[in-house]
Length: 253
Image (cartoon, rainbow, N blue to C red; front, side, top):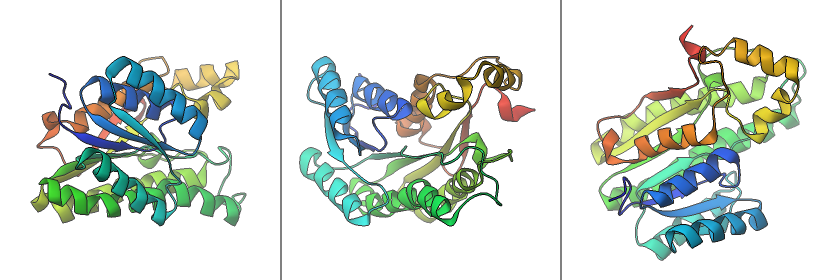
């Protein structure tokens, strides 16, 4: 029996490296999954491949996480298609300009990053909670970052949102613990996705990055997917309001 058998999950940002790995792993472990993203052609191909391997376990929906009406639609379609909702993985996110300081960040850039990373996470939480109450509980996994735990030189807007996701998770965890709705944040370090590849494609930058990671290698999307799987499953039934850090030891120093 799979670790998520009988559970229904929404995973946003499903066409990115981590989101794609999460959708595939959740399907493998028995979940019914609503995978959402803006790149509909890529999403359709991912859904087709996963369903060919694991049966008709995944549906894909176009979804701008910063749009409240689209959140209402996604939640409604999830319940309509699968009958309930147990898990939300708020995975969708953007980095913005990775070198922007407070001085160089434009208001347009600030608003764009906050809309996706923080408002999108809030809206997801807001609209899944009523359905999780009906289901008798659930698990919300909010993807933050090590940038939400420690300071770094830029990017200002990104770090602000990831810190916000961390404390938002704790607040919501306290508000809904009595309803058996668990809320945790997951904090990836350097993971081999398009977001980090744009930086580590430079060999000098890659070597500098490896120098601050005790395990001395870049993580893979599946490393984060396994963390999300644990938090989504009943194995973590006594875990709420906390952070799961998956960073090769980067923040331990």
